Length: 492
Image (cartoon, rainbow, N blue to C red):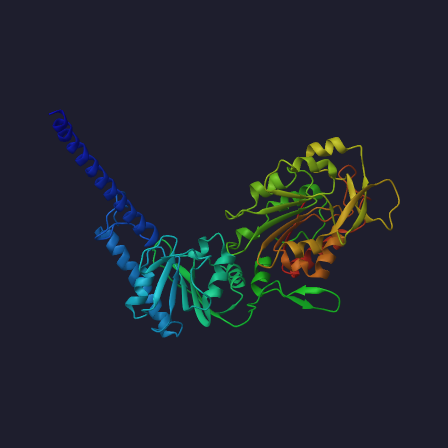
């Protein structure tokens, strides 16, 4: 009797265990199915026949959404039909749409008969759009006859060089790349062309934009060539008898001609006039679009302390277009070095900018140190560098370095480079060296304080004997810089 009761009680427990195990197995199967759909197939589980426990929000299928998709598809169809009529695209073209946001450009290509078309995006939507960022395309070399970047995607990328490199890698020689950009000026167009140095510019024109808030966009058509293409850059060097000169395009000359004029007449009160004139400065980055530059670099030559110009002026006043600048502070005076240890984003070069690598002597005026450090500028303490081979007198020894050589090894023609130079008269050595080496062609904008025998604030009618150069010689320096394509301003 007891054994019979035990057998009867065991059966429900066995059945319960079997049911629990079957239910657990079913849950695991469904979870595995959901994971497969999302991670392997590259899409959310919101298609017919798919099921998962955490479905994505269904796509917007409201009438307004459908109308927007139709409008976008019709717009791209019109764009691509024009490209077909001009011979840049054909029904046989193997085509790629880069970082397509909606996939409507891919649909439009297939609608007009370019069947072999695909898109890439950071969010896949098979079968038309595969996963893949623009700077790392999931395709082998020389795959496509036609590549397209719409919706100002290139404008927003944080890796323009990598973007361009991948287009050059996957586009076949003779293939066409078409990009839509909101940039408007010739400077930004040339910056874009510098990115795609394996492609030749075929045409650039304004076309209607799909968004009514922006009446037009620029459409640029490039063709991939077999070798490196030069599309008219400022940074070319033309060999002369003794110097390298910049070949400056006309649009750069036009930009510079629209800058604030140089002060032709020597100011009687330069400490006031030059400071006031800087308020009228037309910064290059307020005149042109700098988004297509690879890096954005600011070099402060004779930086003194952080608050002298980096913190008080460049960080707060210079228009950066939301770009992060690499900042280099070149300062030989050891009194300022400790402060830079705590300044993130600023790289200190504790040397003197010079024409070659050698030991230099600075003549130091010790007495006003405290006052000048507090003011942050240190004016008059460091009397300019002299080579160790011809200097006699009370001095501090410091290491000088070849500034022009350093600049050429640090930045390239694809970078946007701003230089501020306040070096107590050494500019009359450094700037000729920049011209001699061709490094001057790498600088886009310069803020230069030129040191000459000025009228003294203390003594009307008396000039300072600290510097031997004249104001006329300073003007020659400024004019030569502007002629070479550098937008230079008279720093105070």
